[in-house]
Amino acid sequence: MRVVNAMMSIDSIYLQRIEALLASGRRVLLGLVGAPGAGKSTLAQALHAHFGAISQVVPMDGFHLAQAELERLGRAHRKGAPDTFDSAGYVALLARLRQPHSDEVVYAPDFRRDLEEPIAGAIAIDAQTQLLICEGNYLLLDEGHWSKIPALLDEVWYVDVPDDLRQARLVARHRQFGRSQEAAEAWVQTTDEPNARRIAQGKSKADVIFKG
Image (cartoon, rainbow, N blue to C red; front, side, top):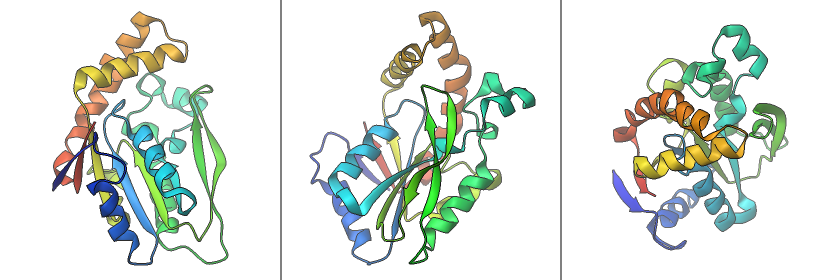
């Protein structure tokens, strides 16, 4: 397992790893995993900016169950836990993306934080796109449908940052989308952190530890 420092410049060793994968000529699926607030989305967008038109970001968050369904199931207070996603649907999407057909556009869902809802068919993925940056919390979770994900990815990078920084980011995010300081801190401790501990159990299985 290679440890990579996030402070390296954009042309550093982690980009060379991706370039080596792309040299095969086939589509590459790169997984970015980490606890909530680790910076997966930021890293995904930085990689997308570097690789440009040959790349696309495919977030796992689009597979959140709708708020109405979470409320029906009694899981709304645990939104973000593994069983609050359509894990089978996400695996099915990755399987389709793993073997693209030359004339097929695959549509993936996205997640709107301002609405707190997934949006179906929001991301169009052309068959010619060479690099798919697949980011999400549970890419290395060894249970249920989640356990099928590593076999569908070429590499998985674990995005690792100090817990105090990660938690501060989460509180700020929750406040940005309407929670009070107290409610944001409570959500981080009661919902985000239990999920973070489960995600960390897969850290040793990552191909790269990306230090944020």
